[in-house]
Image (cartoon, rainbow, N blue to C red; front, side, top):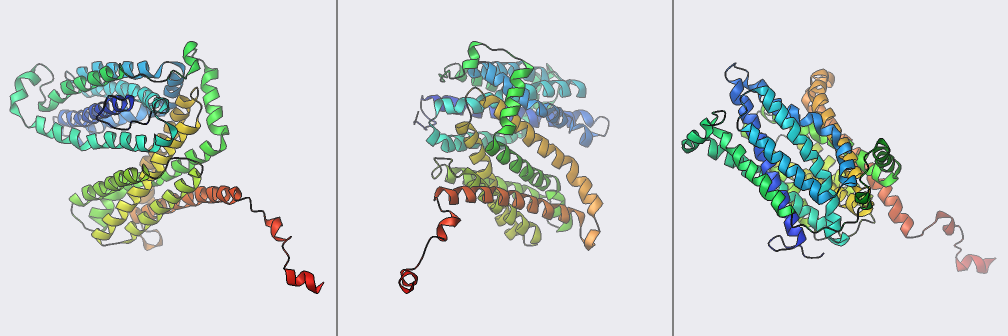
Length: 440
């Protein structure tokens, strides 16, 4: 289908609005859960520690994406997404009554599991309703719909938390001012499921006729993922890139406020610049990329741009230069994400697509988790080495890691492009000048 208009009655628009509304509910639930956990922690004076409880609850099940991908391959993707939305609707409703950290942890843990199951199903169904030459454009719009709802969810939570008119409603629950947002989230998940009900995707997954669920099926997806050279190389290169990029979010605030002495708001401006670069990249690439013959070359180029721009940002002490180079790094990062997702959708068999995305997200989340755990520790350990600040050394090292990953992908892509021209080194030995032949 070539109809890419979001304000229409096309299958693309149904999936777009369902995903955007569902993402809004996810962001709002996450922010509200963190705020609720922090509110509960104020009674004991540990609000900073209790605020991370929902985050931990969502990180733990993230490594189960491979199993979520298997579910996407063995069952009808449309109904998997509908069931996941309805289950999250019920779970979020319980957050309205949650008044302790244990219930917040359990509800967020279960909600994240259904989010993980939904994600590979959504990614897998996209190629069934979109022609391959439009995948990049479609995924750019999906990503914009996902991340554009992030600030909206945050602003709405702040607005509703400050309104006393909902106090009577909140008293029926846990009494927290912001709990009304959880009731709103139930409506968003219900509306998302309702839209998906009208989705008519191609039922190309033959596994749906025999939805067996076994260790053999899981192993089949693992083997395909790791034995397909191009997919494996791209996935692991991006994982190294994520290890480096994760340190930006962990150490960026310290680097700006303590090392460089900027204000507290500087980190927010930096993240906003990074996100703007991502959106700019997606809007731009969606008009130029329609095939994936040179995917390694393009992804490698984007990684190189990201690594160089981050290195420049961390070497600078001028805030304007930092914002500009971080914006450029966002352009590179957005390109890497968009091209990778689109390539996996276009190149993977429908029967294995869910498991491929499940494995990809597992490796990606594992890379981010490693980055989050290692960055601070490494910064403390390296502090003072070479008479340099540890935070600075880790950030510089992360930019080099991204740059090296980009060089590897760029080299692989360059060799393939060079090979496409059919130029063989041995052919040059056969070339002789006419003057040489006449002299002989």
